Length: 180
Image 1 (cartoon, helix red, strand yellow):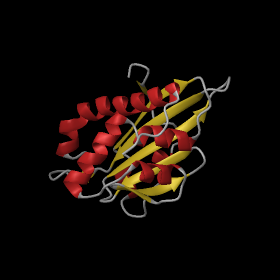
Image 2 (cartoon, rainbow, N blue to C red):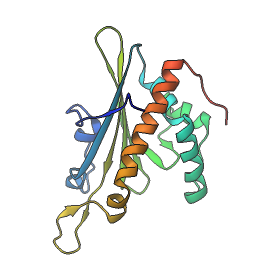
Image 3 (cartoon, rainbow, N blue to C red):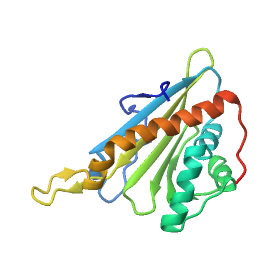
Image 4 (cartoon, rainbow, N blue to C red):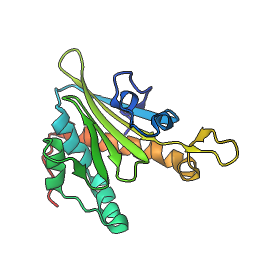
């Protein structure tokens, strides 16, 4: 976890460049990015598998299934990683390149972004970020973060580091897919 650092969202990020037709300006209020480096070359598919099939995210998948009835399995993770599905648990694929994946939750309130960036010497930087759609302040009408996100903001930062750290450890150790 300590090998994961928070950094500014890169200009090339789909979090910055992808805009929904409706409420495009609502995505400027909150974007974040966490990064970690590995000494080996990692593909986006490998990163997606390691991230969404890590122990912390498997627990999150079970919570999502229990709370909103949207199950997902290791097979669904593989389908997402190889690009054969446009839906995964509570998310839909908004955009994808060879090095980036942008997901949006089914209600249109959040975005999750994964990217791999080659490093000199053959390594890879793994990037994970989130976007939270702002809501109008009830008094001023100005864009702001929801009270729920403001209350859970510290947890979000910690959990983002845990998720990216778990994916990093899986990739560094060469762990394969987890059984369901």
